[in-house]
Length: 155
Image (cartoon, rainbow, N blue to C red; front, side):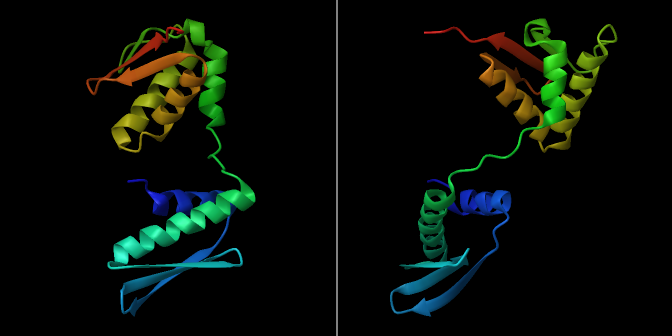
């Protein structure tokens, strides 16, 4: 099942749109009413959760139709590190704690990636993975302090 609630909320956050949801009990169960950007949508369902899901699905369709789908801005610092290092110069394995002092940018990238992974947010690692994917590479972090990088084969 698609997470329409999360998608709608992230689109509103990216576009700085306020929204509000309210619930009322009706004969069929619940009605969720979602107000945003001068619009109001509602959905009826037997459960509160289903009504909320349906209202967010309708609201997301309207929002994306009017304003397009926005993606979060990338992390310019990680992008610049990858650019300075050069994707072809990245090692096939980045290991936590390995001395990469011969390349300060690579050492900084390693520290950022493993800090992101250890914090549990994975935000920086996910951005790194996204950047490499657009350049034709894949990554995998094995949970044991190693990030593997390889070039994807073209079909």
